Amino acid sequence: MNGRRTFGALEAGGTKFVCAIGTGPDDLSAIERVPTANPASTLERAAAFFRAALGRGEPVAAVGIAAFGPIETRRGQPGYGRLLATPKPGWTGADVVGPIAAAIGLPVGLDTDVVGAALGEGRWGAARGLDAFVYVTVGTGIGGGAIVDGRVVPGVPHAEMGHQSVARQPGDTFAGVCPFHGDCLEGLASGPAIAARTGRPAEALSGSVLAGAVELEAAYLADGLRNIVYTISPQRIVLGGGVVAMPGLIERVRERLRDSLGGYPGTPELGADDFVAPAALGAMAGVLGAIVLAERAALEAGLSPPGGP
Image 1 (tube, rainbow, N blue to C red):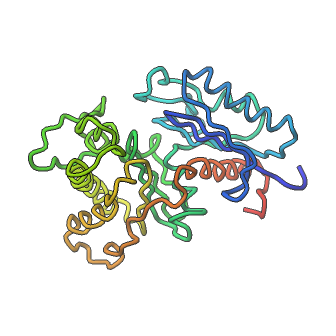
Image 2: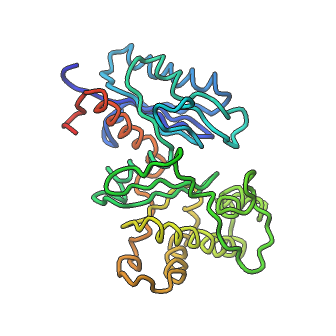
């Protein structure tokens, strides 16, 4: 394939699938959002998007998929590309990669949606120029993707940072909303947890209810981020997701994390205001990260992306 080369990107989320064609934030020639319904209809609509792009002559070299999970991301495993024990009704065992690959006949790259967002923020956003960072999303769920030495940290099949244990805050008797663990970080601090505690979604809170929710949310997130700091030692933690937009939350998380670390190990970077940074790419982080996954799939297939590797 000669001349201009572009990539397909699919952010497969629990609420919607975002399909796009392009090479980066300044070059997205098509974007389509598909509500996440049942696996067959949702994946067929996504496949149809890419078939249509190829049909009109788009020079697509590969497609990247950044998917909600948990999902088997290890090539060579019998369940590669299939969702595992997901809380999304009807999606456990669904093959996310197969229908797309069959429809387009091109290389397909796969990783989790949070790893996709991490790759996007590392290429174009808040972690640009860093080789060790973690992206954490706080929304319908909580998840994280780690990049160390410029590479995605692998796992079996991948990290699930939102399901770590955190210490309960004094007086908090909320059972938690995680269907697997109850009071893990996701169970206590995700968007649904906030809504269950207050009776309203995070974006609808105000006054003293908002202030109290921010304080509790910051405490739990700081506890979870401390675990990440001490296990991965990142240069930066990037926070994304809808809950992070709560007024004053990021600032309070920074303060609580500094207190939680207790001055140990004493490196000044951990106390810097940009150590915990808001995501720069917003809602497009995942789909842009899927472009990076597509680039890598093209390279594995022996193709060179635009501008080289």
